[in-house]
Length: 398
Ligand code: FEO
Image (cartoon, rainbow, N blue to C red; front, side, top):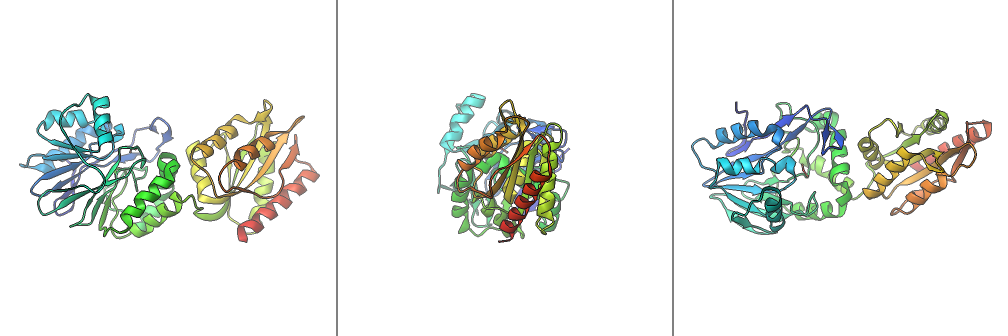
């Protein structure tokens, strides 16, 4: 049965929630579920913005039929071809065979590759416009936010911005589809940050580019493909995107990441964290073998400072720490201060190897020398860890 909501005169929310999905993109845990959003704008012509993931297809088609009423569907704008938004495209064409498909050139190629679709598509590019009656669709190219074919659509008469994956978040919607800043900060922000850095974080330059294009627009409502819709509080969320996409730290704080086999490197990490905390600096500690890599990545980007502490393993970095560092590198981790702690019982060398990865990233600054623990923390290494902790805290407060 339909559950569509009218967001504004003639604009309908048609999406649905999946609270059973274990891993989004087969990679990211979504314990709070995820929403797949789609929208219908009714004017002299009717326009659908994207379809949905197969998991919520039945709800979506009920919602679409309800929102259309007696009207026919004139256009579907394919803003993003990733299957969480396009999987039900073929079903849409079966139900609405006369609909005109609007897509970028790159999306048209993907429609053929995914669905064998060779029908006529109305190809649009940056700056193209299409009148649908009293309103106009203006298309904004948003390549690599998050795939190369992505389009945003802006409706200047109303200030509606359909933003594809941008400004989306993990987390199902629960009746309140319009974002409220305080609720979002408490219930969605950590997921939004994790979504951003893991899904589109690699493409900060491209995100900045499209944010510049959007900066001059008068926006009354932002309609993303996941998560709540933004109205009055959008400036607050936009500010987060400006910080995230510029790879700037969101908070002056320290994230201590450790990889420990028998607990001795953990002990070193916690001594260090206590020394930082004793100076009144915010610090969090993560076992990289326990916390999901998507959360580690998100926390690394949130904080201004990081400590990487690893035991030496197979003559190298412990595997979960090495994977994490490579993940940071793949997501363009940069502009941070960091410190290194290593452990080793006969030939410690994780520190030099970790430093080799981190020092190769853009604008990274190491604090202090690497601190070495030989098997277990002793009085000497404890003193070195406390000294390093104070040094890090001073740097955070500077
Ligand atoms: Fe929500 Fe890039 O798809």
